[in-house]
Length: 124
Image (tube, rainbow, N blue to C red; front, side, top):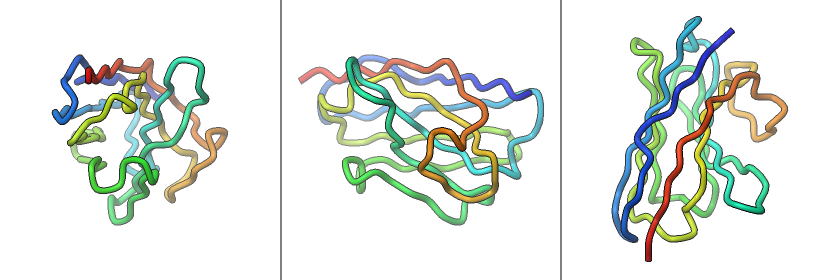
């Protein structure tokens, strides 16, 4: 089992920045791809960014390209999401998740472990 704990969410004005962290415990996640998802009220959970096991390749949703950066520190068993130039439409609960394999997948059902989520609210 893997436990994931997200942190770093909060209230920020439009144009501001936040850095989310996701710390894993229970076992190492260095051999698995990881992703950040978000879910706004009334919307489906969507993949925002993902990163391969080594950090050598990343994926971003079109809506966040150029503004968000995903990274990982395998020595710390932690993945990060740097969010810049935040917009009101970025408001959502953000979840990190561990994929079932080393490579990026966009399918939610291919992520085995999920955190509890952290709220990000962007005021306009």
